[in-house]
Image (cartoon, rainbow, N blue to C red; front, side):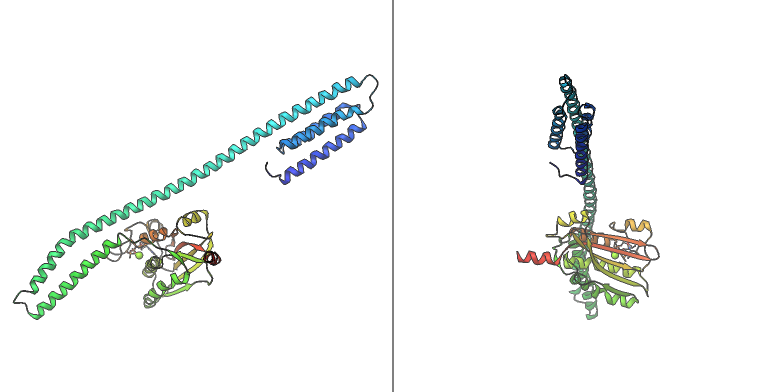
Length: 390
Ligand SMILES: Nc1ncnc2c1ncn2[C@@H]1O[C@H](COP(=O)(O)OP(=O)(O)OP(=O)(O)O)[C@@H](O)[C@H]1O
Ligand SMILES: [Mg+2]
């Protein structure tokens, strides 16, 4: 049985009042059976409460009250007619009660079906959103896999001639007529070749990045190292870099090294976009998680509280036009000169943040600046203490 609402209680009070008024009227005019038809009113009111037990009690009370009119003195010879009249009233009351209950029950079934349908629709929409996200993720992974294949094949193709160059360079150094000066130059060539090989190996390993291994950490522990690392570059360009980080934030779910890389990427972009006298501010904070953030976070972050940590990097740089903003997270999208940027910074950063169960987003206004916001799962410090106590 569902709990009674305030409205139901009001309706029941009204029905009881109606019933009592009719009982009183009946007491004054027992001969007049018309008054008994009034019991239809409390019955109709009670049907809206949609409770069979209450309905049964009401109908029973109305039937008893109708027949109790017979106890009053009637004119001689009219008793039989009174019984018939009151039985007709009782029949009408029973019919009204039956029709009323059936009508209300049908309405309740329809409402239930409508609610179930809207719940189904909501679930379908949610599933659809998840599907779109999964498709996006797949697209991104496919592109990354393609990048990996490309790099691997380039490394392989370049590796073969490099090895033969290295072999010939070494052979050259062992030639009998080689002067010390030539030897020095050959050593330099050999050194640089080794560097190229190392760069290619690094490139190969960066296409198979290690998965993040996040832990619950203090926010400042995650943010400070990147600010400290990048500060001199900002200072040199005449840009003020500030960190605005309140104390006592919840803990953040982060792989220190990975989030450090993300922040360095984002700060490098801000540095490139901002001219002297500009400002770049890193602001950390926390807020309540949306249901999507909570679903996403709880998949990976063990013991996440219903809140998230936000790390925002705001610059007063050149900003981006709308069409660039749409493409900023695409792999290889860059506005930098050839050789100056790979266009992978934001793409890989978003991948990394998403692997933490978080999100990386960006808003920008051309000529005014850009805000990059990282959202990561959070845990209230008390929850951590409780977890440790268990
Ligand atoms: N803070 C910013 N202000 C203005 N434009 C930005 C900012 N951050 C990114 N962008 C734009 O987004 C593009 C893509 O950035 P992303 O970091 O992915 O690659 P990149 O910086 O071009 O290359 P890389 O990161 O390899 O140096 C940039 O080329 C730039 O046009
Ligand atoms: Mg970049």
